[in-house]
Amino acid sequence: MKRRNFLHQGTLGLTAVAAGGATWKGLQRAGSQAGAPFHLNYAPHEGMFKELGGADFLDQIRFMHDQGFRSIEDNGMPGRSKEEQSRIGETLQRLGMDMGVFVLDKGGNGAHTLTAGRQDYVDIFLKACRESVEIAKRTHARWINVVPGDFTRALPLGIQTANVIEALRRGVEILEPHGLVIVLEPLSDTPDLFLRTADQSYMICKAVNSPSCKFLYDMYHMQRNSGNLIAHMDTCWEEIGYMQIGEVPGRKEPTTGEINYTHIFRHIYDKGYQGILGMEHGNSKPGKEGELAVIRAYRQVDDFL
Image 1: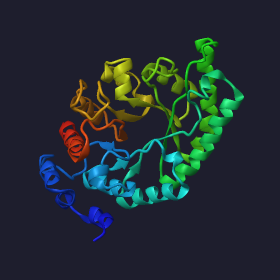
Image 2: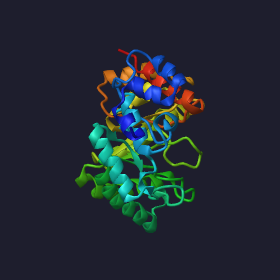
Image 3: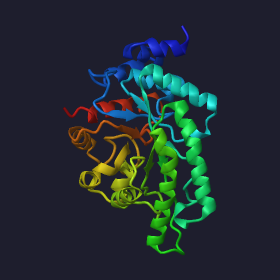
Image 4: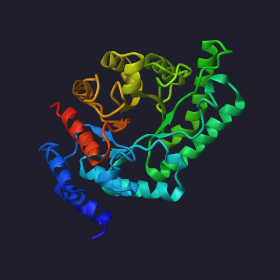
């Protein structure tokens, strides 16, 4: 039997046997609910389960489904060929899985920051929005990650903010008719980044005033920039369109850092959140054991009912 078919058809135990005896024991330790869907919609990415799932991304997607995950996300989707994008979309459809966020290609980053108000930068952003419509059709995606870019230090902050809002309004004119949603991401990677906090993102979304402009609440970045995760989440709740996960410090799977993800997940579940939570982090350990540790960690923090 081909490995692809084996992974697709096998139960959790059979998948573990395919990966070896140590893997079988590791998956047994993942808990009695191993293989069942999670309470929330967590989305792994390519490479997170490459040892257990196989080198081919489609095989990894099937493995993710077998472990109970019902979505994926892929930041680099615009860089894949049209044929590969279609194969990924078709695989997700067959498995009943959702496509999470992908990153807008080139538009609104450090090199073409939307804060500058330059028409050539805005044109790059709008071109990427139009291309994203076609990518979304092939992959059945809905959310597009946009980082407005860096500060333009020569301009007052209010002018920079107005430039971002105006560019986003033009972007949603392209995306809204297709039901697509920009999710702005405040980041903590460098002090040069313009968008950094939940309240700043909330204000911009309110000003754009479109169901196609929300923001991405990445708990790794929010913990580093602001902390007080649940309070900030609640204050800005109506403009949050997507969430991502990562521990602090280290940006690895839950349970490896200081964030109480069981408590957070219970809170957003009780609030009725039905969206995707992207697993925007690395594995704390290498190899198959590291991949098993990720599965065990999510079973642990998802056990909140």
